[in-house]
Length: 252
Image 1 (cartoon, helix red, strand yellow):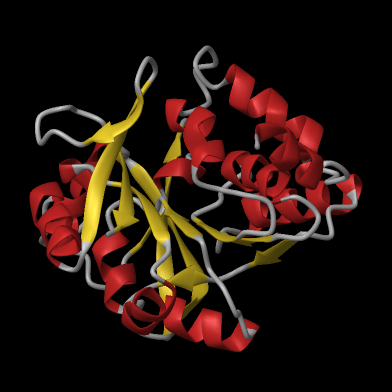
Image 2: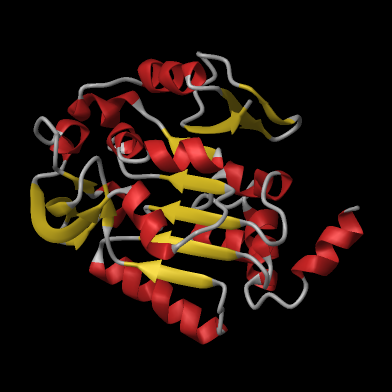
């Protein structure tokens, strides 16, 4: 079976890069361990969303896994990172990747990203959509922030606009606004029942008035089971005290 899957992935321009990223994940500080475990739940032909794609580490991992018959939609509202992912897409000639320069939230319209700076350098990985947030929260550690106007849509509207007929996995890393994204994703989750991989940290969620326990509880009540990645055991049922910030929710 594994050979059949590998054959189906052959020919994807992102294949070699995907294999390098997955092999390096347990050892490289700039890669999250969970990258190594994506192959277990992303098969050839899958359609995935990478929300909060930043510079595309998950985008290219997923693009290699879905192969030439699948597709990855990279959603990144920040001009610099989204342009970088799109330039990489053109360089690799990766026709199975589309970049969307928009933020996803609870409702569509306009919004503002708070982009922190450290020693005048932008910290793209800590930018967040301010709609619904109570102040800077965990980002108060940064002395300077830049307001970046962005377009905002909902996951439901994006999926309808793209005319998707399947959706297998949605990865979301948007610095605490994950619960707000879920508020605009009800129709999509009910129709496609995708796996959800969410970065959840209390320090970021607090500025949106929620907690890890609440988000996990609501998704479990909606029919998902929460899992964490273990280097030795793979995906295992999540313990409330396991300290892992990335949680994989699988539909029951």
